[in-house]
Image 1 (cartoon, helix red, strand yellow):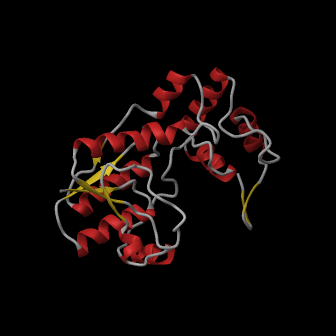
Image 2 (cartoon, rainbow, N blue to C red):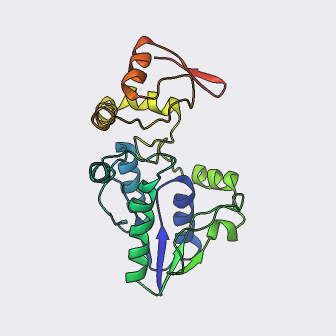
Length: 226
């Protein structure tokens, strides 16, 4: 039996992987599915996890976000979320099929019971956080006790679903990535952000103009300034 931990590097999978090593030590494979669009802080976090776990992450890929955008000549959006299927789910299924029999450890918490696994009958599934009764408070508390800081952004840098404040942060902190995403929109004639989702422009070029003008973004009860 192969014991495979689905380790994206987000707070839940990170807490699960580290705690499993403490309470159920055995020969784990730590499976990661990069998209090629991670921020530098996420790459650093993965390297730190490898040191803490004492093993390298097995990174499996099925192209990159950029390569599939070029292939389809389209951007992913809420109607066509092919990015998750092609870059995350399908590579994991292939890995499980070629490493059967396997148990896949998935970081779904006890306070999100409506969520289910997406991988099909290719392995035995375990949800340790649910087995331990861990919700978001327990996950955060455990990571805090272990001194583990999760990057502020763990998904793709140019995810269509991210909040406006995150686009502003990307423009401010990673202008090269923002400019590349802007160029993709210009080349394809479509936008990452859905038109009409708020009072801001959908396109990144016009959005950048608003950021440069100093227009404020409200994030909950706090405002971000230029």
